[in-house]
Image 1: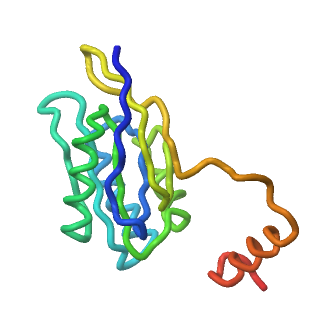
Image 2: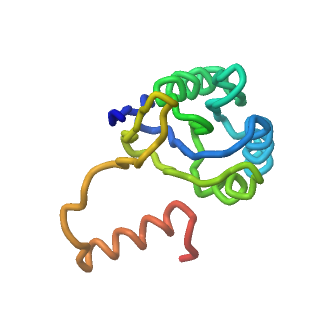
Length: 161
């Protein structure tokens, strides 16, 4: 077995969700979950089929984001993984809807940070071992850090003032 890393390619302001599911129906069901959770959402989604034709299956509401999701899914190449790339929206708005899709087994990450996946490859295929999501901590927040965090959440509307 060989291990390697795959860096996700995306603009810094885009958010991604990477997960694993178990069935080709995932493509349409995640599409429905995304548009049901956020009307007008801009996203692309790609799914690595791991039997039969073994194709990357994709959908989305934005052709550029769909192509970017396909490119990343091909680079990952791990069976039954999916990549969602979103523009002008946040994972917090769609995560519960995605987790409630019956085919979804789990979520590896949901972030706007730079992401690298740790991949294992054997003669039988590839799998995702883990995720490197952003940078390591520089310390523990102090009172000013707590104030900044609380102010930010209220400013962007996720907490009531």
